[in-house]
Amino acid sequence: MAEVKIQRVSYGGWDNCLQISNRIVNLIVTTDIGPRIILYGFPGQENEMSEIKSTMGLTGGDKWRIYGGHRLWHSPEDRIRTYEPDNFPVPWKEITYGVHTLQAVEPNTGIRKEMEITLSPDSTAVTILHRLTNKGKSPVELSAWSITAMAPGGKEVVPQTNKDTRLLPNRMISLWPYTSLNDSRVYFGGKYIILRQDPQIRQPFKFGTSNEQGWAAYFNHDHLFVKYYRHNPNARYPDLGVSYETYTNDYMLEMETLSPLTMLGPSASIEHEEKWELFDNLQMPDDEAEIERVLTEMIHIAG
Image 1: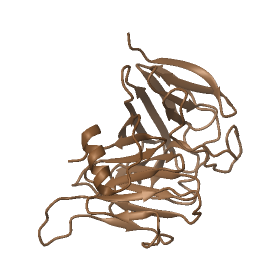
Image 2: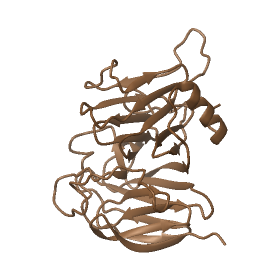
Image 3: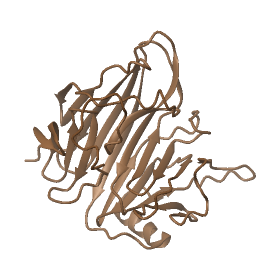
């Protein structure tokens, strides 16, 4: 009978991690810091997420650390507000098929972060409900920003909006000052934007897009990771109006989804849900046509 098992384990130098498993895939959530989902993968196989070796196992201190894995931020990005350290123990409780983590209120922002992380008993499917609550005395405009740092060496696929708007533009692409459009890692195809993580290229690259299809995929380790979210075409989004962003450098690739910008009053909360899936035995496609074939055969997102 399928079941989800939750147990305390040591991982990466942290003694109080939580392993969520169903005999198909494993998740590991840190509680000594974070919370972070630091591992997602098939038992005995590679971690699909990036692990930053120089920060693994560290705790405490007033400097923000990258760590790796999956984290919750709030956008728009700001050097002080966004980079609140998550270096301290996180309370948690067990819920049906998963765990609920509750971070302390950020002293500089008055924002409290929560994640409800659940795993299907009989598949690779993960659901993460992210919640931001304003515990301060003044309204704050923000967007929930869900960031998954993926392991190096993979290839990301982001769908392009295909809506026929006749004489009007149909998509938004945001670019950062350090982003070069002739970067060898990116390919702007007819249906997809394809971004390759290259451990030999240190220069960062980032773009955002109005991803109305609400998914993105990452091929690595002969596996396929897919994250899904809901894009609201009538909402206002940060960073010139994008709900999906991606960033890469020489040691990771970040897959980032955003909720609509919200003026969050005192004691009010916003929620942002992601769903993940992981597929086995899939070689990395070489071109856009092959990517289209793989996505059409394997999952329900290519249309």
